[in-house]
Image 1 (cartoon, rainbow, N blue to C red):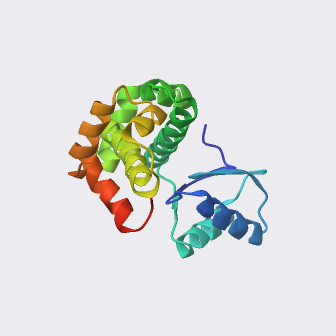
Image 2: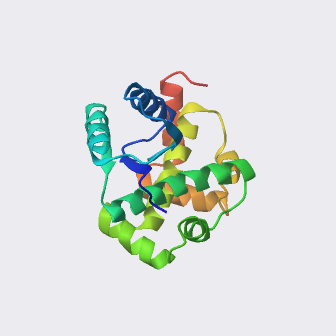
Image 3: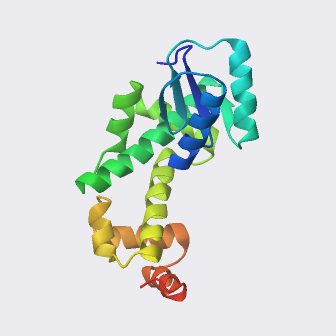
Length: 187
């Protein structure tokens, strides 16, 4: 899966990151084939000198070139989790992340989960929940969507399950986040 024309990058979190890195790589005269969060594929293999230039470019922009194969795998898992959450939001149905991750990486889920925990200091399951809760908090503070609507959009089995997770992971209930929205004037 990892080839000489592919690099992995730590710290890419949004489309703006993709735009910055794309522009910088083009300025270096490199031909980018594809770029996703955490991953760049070039049209042709890159040599070690070019790889070092890329590493410096990334460092100058607050990113990091990942050369550790296990770290690359962990970053791929994070990307797949983000993709899975987006998929849940599009389909509004529950998703088995274990199946999604293993189908993309063709590796045993338990092995990936253990590796993830070793590198991130948190279980993969807790990471998935944390990513989903981050979206829930954002919705509650920036939109007028109800917890029921958010629960449906993120594929939760029930509103009460989401409510318990929100309280458990943030220490705050739904009303706290709604009060935040009202405090900043978003109705």
